[in-house]
Every structure is written in C-alpha cells, then in structure tokens.
Image (tube, rainbow, N blue to C red):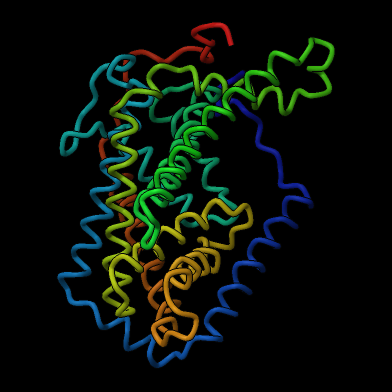
Length: 342
C-alpha cells in the first residue's frame, strides 16, 4: 500500500458525476420542500431572537468541541509516542489540530460525505501516516462516533423509561460485540481461493479488524474525549435551537441529535443542506404533538444552526491553515497487524 501522495489522480467517471448530481438534487429538493412548508417571515424574525450571549455560548461550545476532537486524534493515533513533540497551540498539537479542522470543513462543505476522503491526504501530509493507517483510524473514529451517538440517544432521549434506557444500552453493547464476532467469523471463513473474488469486502474487513485490535483505539481517554465532544456539540446546538424556536431544551436536544444522525444517511446534498434540517425536524417532531405550532419554527431554526456550524467550520479551517506546520522526525510505518489471532 503506497502513501496517499503517490496515488494517481484519475478523472471522475460518468457514474461518479451522476451520483454527485443526484446528491445535489436530492439535498436541494429536500431543503426546498421543507422551506416551502415554513412561513418565511417567522423564520427571519426567529433568527434575530437569540441574544448575543446565546450565540457566543453556541460558538464557544463548537470551538471547544474542535479542541476535543484534536485531543482525541492525538490519543487514537498515539502521536506523542511516534512523533517528536511539535509546536502546540493552547495545549494541543498543531499538526493534529490542523488535520481535524481542515477535515471538518471538508466534511461540512462537500456532498455525499466526500470530505471524508480528505483525511488520508491530510494525515499523510501533516502526520506522515501511511494511507492504510489513516483509513483504519478514520474507520475507527466513525464507528466510535456512531456508537457514542446511539448511546447518548438511548441514555438521554426525553420520555424513555429507565427500563427502556437500560435495555437499549445493553442491546447496543450486544450489537457492538456481535458485529465484532461476525466480522471475525467472516474473515476466518474466507479461504485463499475466495479472496480474489471477495477482495473488496475482505480488505475492508481486514481494516476494520485492524481498527478493532489497535490498542490505542481502545484507550479510555479516546472514548471519554469522543463522549465529551458529542455532548458539548449537541448541547451547543440544542441551546441555539431552543432559543430560536422557543421549544424546551430537552426537545431541542433531540432535534440536534436527529440532525447529527442524519449525517449517517449515505445520500447527502451540498454541505448537507436538506438532510440535516430534515433530521432536526424529525427529532423535534418525535417529541412534540403533531399539531404543535412550534413545529413551524423548527426548519428555520435548523437552517440557522446549520449555517452557524458551516461558518464556524470554515473560519476554524482558515485558522488551521495559518497554524505553524511541524513534522515529527519519524513516520509511523506500515499497516496495523493484528496484535493477537483473530
């Protein structure tokens, strides 16, 4: 496996361009449908409703979440073990912070989650990682994000009984370990003659297995930073949604969670417009009565929150571009071999 910089650049295929056009059309159509059912005048008035304190709290929450993501990347990759200490900014490694901020902006701006492809390139350029290692790290962080978001939803979703919360969390743990067991079974059943025909899924499964076996991925600090990041980002989003739409904070928190879960949907419009607002609306609608007048303000509030997130991501990426670049003296070599028999 060669580094990302060495990979040839090939022009986009017609099928890829068609998928991209479909993503833009889907996102814009969904956003247009949502806005067509939302009165414009109340939306404009609602955007001016939050005080400067609310806006500052939201922005501070987002910025702090970026710092937590940078710290998480340091832990997941074990950068302090493999790299000489670089310059630091507010206690965070500038190389990890640059990767996180630039990658976050790409994910927020590009359709179809295409911004995820920036991570291997950024990790190779800033952290001197092999592409295979960067892909394993990205895979793990996304699995960890989904698990933490699902756990937060089960633990804090308004209206659930204690029994339902406990049962849901236990089910989540069982699903996590069950998926890991199934992955190992599939790899063990694959014979050398089958690998040529199943190279695609087999290589993916091997990378997932490497991610699951890498000790640094399972550090308690990595899970703690992931949990803190999502709790802070959801709290910041819920605070702004509540202030704009006048819904209660717990209901707004459900909407913020719905918006983040909508990002898992494989078809994303440009900058996530449409799918994010639909996720917020679905999260709020699940907690309000169907005929509640407050629902009329939710789409406008979701759009304002989305734009706030995008502006913050772009501004943070601009700051990241100005951070001093600093490379470690060593390079993390090779793929991640399993640490014990699978």
